[in-house]
Image (cartoon, rainbow, N blue to C red; front, side, top):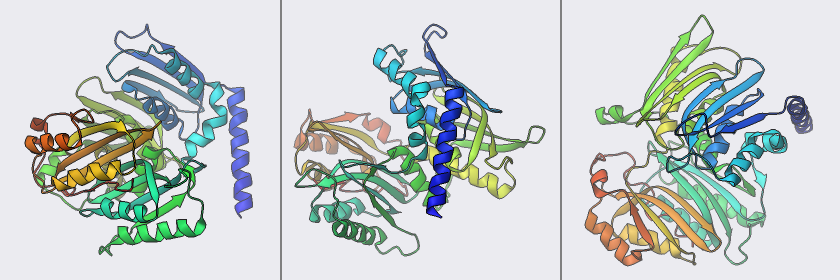
Length: 436
């Protein structure tokens, strides 16, 4: 059976390559057509997931998509994106422009299936650990304690939390060799002990640990993990929570056999990626779309059908689409004050930093941990463990202990005071990643 599936996948890949050779993608980047943005036009043969591939390339370059027009009805895919850099300027860097051309144009055919699959790509640099489960105070402290005991170092990690659920993708190496961990017995022990930590005393919801030698698209994988963990199922339903939710609506356009999804929400980076990713993973095809995110509010409109060709068939399915898109948008909305740490990496750095956070009663609600060329560049979103706004004196004390130039505050205490005092995620990930 596995041989047949592998043969079928190989045939699909070969057919896709043939189609691309016959109809090579065309990418045009125009810096003259729009006054305040670079315009990127992509024309290619159509296939399921191609919109996500294109958006993923642009988002991975940290470009801001201010407008988008999508049409893929039939066998051809035509997209127009208005994009800027993080500062709102047109894209003029020749390296970035060349990368976009190569990634989306005819040269990209050999990596197309790799980008689409979000599967595991073999790596000898690190071991990938995926964690999902119910959150509780100090969960990541326990996880990192297990990794430290097993002599695993966390070199990269991303942590998301939403609706009392938690997910993390962590890249770890052997503390002594600095390479991926390959001993099957040791990996089995890592998996078993981490799973025990994630389960805790909560027997009502599943905890999951996956260990592999591979590379995945981390943000896409986190969406898939939290979707599979059903974080979209609402546990809390209070008035303030309802008011903060994005406005998602789904109606059927019976004349054209489309379901029309409209989304209004506060704009933020990577918003388009989050919604397209979720629609794709739910097996919906976007035939047409219009996105406008030039102001503080983003408007997205999608004309979709299920991959089987049918529009949304029932009210239950409609509600599920709404809930899943709300969750996709909310996962990346971080509660708390943003702190950025940049310094020379060393053993125990993350442990020391997060210990200081914990000693000052701060919890980490979202985190991105990276190490490159001996430098640690980490981002933490923190809030008071009791749910109250972060006190400015507390931040001053923490920066004094860690180093004023090492730890920078992004945002202001005034912004934090607007955060509700009660939140189902107020205690998340205290003492993060003490594995260094």
